[in-house]
Length: 131
Length: 392
Ligand SMILES: [Zn+2]
Image (tube, rainbow over all chains, first blue to last red):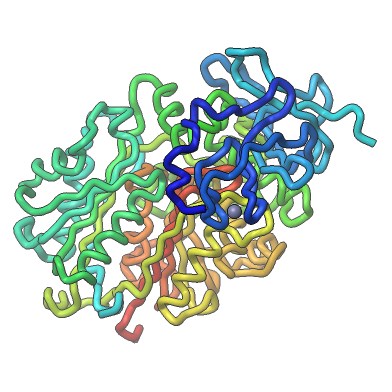
């Protein structure tokens, strides 16, 4: 497949970013590299039009921070984290909603998808089913 | 032709800090005129300008011709002025463009200028402008502030046992102590470990006194092809390496962006980390200096705390890092930062750094990063400078 396949991929607005309960991005059919959100060309091997891919709903909280400086519409403190999604999914930033519990590096988390029009679109919570 | 053929013939700064009555033109004027006077040149000796700025479009509404608008104030017209914007690495990116222009043979004398004015009436606008250093299509709405990105990086290292909170505090104390010696610095007050730990939490484990703050300032560097401008009878500083790289989608298992860029710079110069005598590294939050120790090869994995504790990176140590006070104490006037680093290193290599002078350095390293992608900086630039004359 030539690079010109990248000319006819869906526009960024047309590419789904979630399916209501999981994040959706792309996974390269050639090298397996994943991206959230989807891209037009694989960042690792240069193959165009990586396939749409639904990622695992669970992941590992690599690190986190509690932010004490508020932003418009976002009262402080709030917690942000970096999550590696399971099954060799992408590494993404997102809010972490602990509901009073203490976050810890290495803990299992689960993605939550907001209602249509909600900001942020997704966030993470402790995975209460994790062993 | 190699980069060995390019010399730093003049440097200048407008002090970093809060300068309410000073416009972008005022800040830029002081830095550029100081650098040209330092070089012994007039404005008509300049063949080309690279003008760095990151935020004036959002904060002052001056888009499109930011460089042209500040340069006409000091009588620079007609020659090519190229605007360079690359987040917090705008200054070093502009420097690299100047190096490339001279190497390409299109200019002999190039003025590189960086200016930023971050203090505006509404601090929220400055925070929003800083937040735009990420890929907003991906991260907007989650509240990803600059400080939070660094907080997460440091938390991960602390959790893994590679750094301690005491290390984060100690390097912040060092940063402030160095800044106190620098007349160009924004923060010039010595602080105690207790004051650092007890200051307001920003994005844990970071506290207020660990972080750079909103800052106005400007810095400028004049580069010339070797031999074009007669030596001013003082030590010569030449560019040994000029490298830039862009961040990548990380799986967490690759070498860091800084490591990649520094490796290329060392290769270009035929030098290694052991040859670096003094370094100015990108510490938008003072503890990021510790991460840079590893990524620049000054210590092995997990060795940053011990290196700091040994005193080697203090001004009187064997390899001083951030004698200027770094971004967190000298200040981080975003578009000017990379050039302020080069000004500091030039003063250090010439022996003109007054109360913060390090011991007879020969090789200086400037490390300037900018923006962020998921897990990595968006930009990294590493420059190596050399004093060619022996110290007597
Ligand atoms: Zn691929």
